[in-house]
Image (cartoon, rainbow, N blue to C red; front, side, top):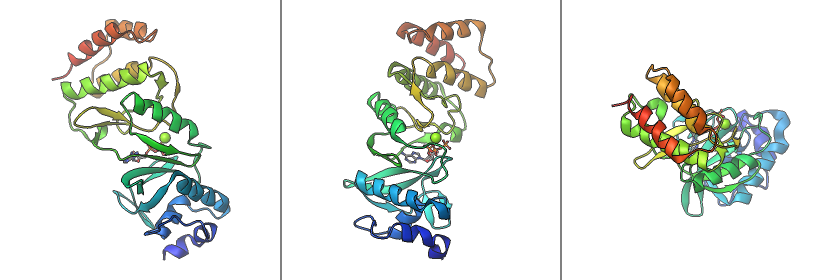
Length: 249
Ligand SMILES: Nc1ncnc2c1ncn2[C@@H]1O[C@H](COP(=O)(O)OP(=O)(O)OP(=O)(O)O)[C@@H](O)[C@H]1O
Ligand SMILES: [Mg+2]
C-alpha cells in the first residue's frame, strides 16, 4: 500500500538508503512529502542531506498520522520526524517538496544563534533540506488553559533574550504554536521567517499576551515599548515586564 502511494519515491532513493535502515521505507516517504511525481530529484537531495548530516534513521512516531507513518509535526514548510543521530533521539525537520522556502540554511543559522542565547532547541546540523535538532519538551502556549504570572515572566524573558541576540522572529506575534513552556524556560521554534534585527520580539509578544486576556495596551505601556525598540534597554525591559505581570495572577 505504501509502495502504491509513492512508488517514485522508492525509485528516487534507490542506492541512497539511510544506513542502517531499520525503517527505510518511512525515510523515503518522509523525504518525498507530499509526493509529487515531478520532484524525484528533490527527494534524492533530501535523502542526501539526511545522510550528509549523519541522521542514522527516521522513526515513525508522533501525534500526526500521514498515509505512510507518524510524525511529530507538520507545517507549510516541513514535516518534523523523530530520528536517531549520534546515539541521540532527535527531531529532524525535513523540507516539504512544496515548501515556498528554497532552503533551511538561514533558518539553521538563526536557530543556532537562538540556541546559543538559550531559547531554542539545540541545532546539531543543517543543510538546504534538513535541520537536526533537540527534541522539544514542554507544552505549546496554545495548549495552556491559563497563563500564570510565572509563565508570562519566562515567556517575556525568552523574547528579551532573542532581542539581545539580534534575531527578529517575525512570527512571535502568534506565539501559540511557536513558544513552548518547559519546566525551566520558554523555548521558541520555527525560525523560517526570521531575520537579523533588534528589539522587536518583546513588543510583539507583549501585544499578543495581553490580547489573549482581553487587555488593550495602555498608552504608557505603548510608550515604554516604543522606546525599548531603540536598543533593548535592560531597565526598560524590567519596567515592561513588571507592567505586564501586573495583569496576571
Ligand atoms: N524540535 C522539535 N521537537 C518536536 N517537535 C517539533 C520540533 N520542532 C517542531 N516540531 C513540531 O513540528 C511542527 C512544525 O514545525 P515548524 O513550525 O518548525 O514547521 P514549519 O513547516 O516551519 O511550520 P509553519 O507552517 O508554521 O511555518 C511544530 O508545530 C511542532 O509541533
Ligand atoms: Mg515555518
